[in-house]
Length: 119
Length: 156
Length: 283
Image 1: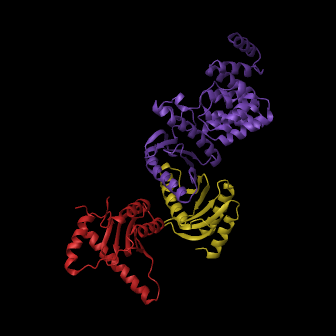
Image 2 (image 1 turned 90 degrees about the vertical axis):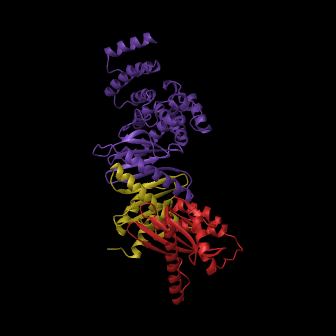
Image 3 (image 1 turned 45 degrees about the vertical axis):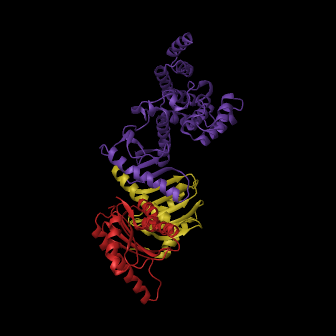
């Protein structure tokens, strides 16, 4: 069963409340399109969604080849920021765009909670 | 796979788009189906039919939008099991053009195609000759022009 | 010195529980008799597992043997027992400096300086760490002062490693570490899946795509250079990092290894890889 849009907003809201998170999105993993978003100004939602989905696909293949199973959470670290992603079983990516020094453990927790809501 | 252009200003933006979006086949054409550039096609007959069909689909949706009293649809996407087809209009100094993009779902996605299509549209707009008026293609010249275009598009 | 070694050996034989092994192990290490030093330190450590100096000695010997991963663990252990242990702080600073993490190196040296403000080795190492990254100085300054490793230039070209030894001494070098060039060709290491099957080539084939996509993503989102990609899988964890702009390093471990520890393992492997790529690869 699909969660109502209000539930999506609430889930994203919990992610964006974490200090250092600049935006959160739900992305269709298959086509890289934005499903829902809460982004600070200046963050390009369509670019984040398309690129996160593409990276998730490539990473999934590499992880399957390595025999470490399906991806449950990933964290792309960069000099000026980070992308943190939890894929859901239903084919959605829960994505957070964050500052480089964000509390990764806390964001991961909120992403996993949001993933449960989204399904 | 080669990228070729009848109108050279389309070439660089198209090459870049193909690389970034991971597109398999691309046509850039006028609304009437006259092809300005192509990537990935190996047979002239495929270019001709794809251009005709793409232009026809755009014409149909434009008409539907008109009947609904809406502005023309920006883009259409058909997603199959392994491939997606993306069809969208873009404004240039050469008039309104249409891009037809076929992408493999293994390699690309609608999100990537849309993302880099915006860039393609902006770059074509910037690169296009500003004051050129599309030439009227006369029936007598049609066959020869088509033949010339196809020769260029396939490097003959 | 040989006389002192003889004397200490004899005294230690008479009183195996004494702390003389610390002096003996250090003397052997300084003489380059690393295997003998290793045996002495390990025996002492077995008898005094909670002695930070024993861990510090053992770490220095391991560092001399270029087993940086275990050296890290030993210095880390020394600090857990004695958070102000200057030798361990300097040792960890040395390892961080070698990895290129100058910030961490400086932080450890600053902590060491707070404990031992008059230690000239710490001041010198701190000046070096603040003055520039690895490649510009000697490991000696950071590695533990008087008891540290022999002066060892960090410039990798000075001590080229053989290709087969790119990850020598690192945990999982032949089953959970992989170094690739920009086009996905294997430069070192190997990967096995949980059933023991060699999956090196299959994974290598996919990794170039992952790296390119990671680089493109951070570029288009204006996030600067990508520094790592950590992923939790249902059966294991992976950490991907670019040790240089042209190479890609993958570390794979089972789920029992926490992600944070995996990052440290990756950091050490990146150090080995960088040394090899920047110098040893030409050997």
